[in-house]
Length: 134
Image (tube, rainbow, N blue to C red):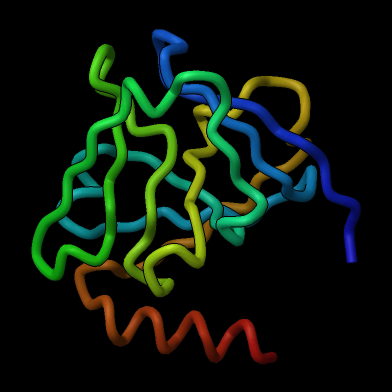
């Protein structure tokens, strides 16, 4: 198992700030669902207990959800940037996905990008689970 580091990051205007515990080398998913493909972001997930909002970030957060309303797309009320969100792929409260481009420079050494077919979510999540079991 690789060592974990404390990564910090947040939104463009710095009103939303967080820290996350994760390896220096991460696997990020690039999703093609209707929402993610418009945003053009990729992110890596961590257990919720490894993610923490810093300072008064809660005062600047708003959330958007659609379709099944399972995923919670969190964004800054000031600059509009989604720097993290609660993915549909995990039961609510179990994981947080951090947007790779919103991690402060200096702690991530490598990012492997994998495609996730969010347009066919059920099939994609099954494929992902099978790949993780190998």
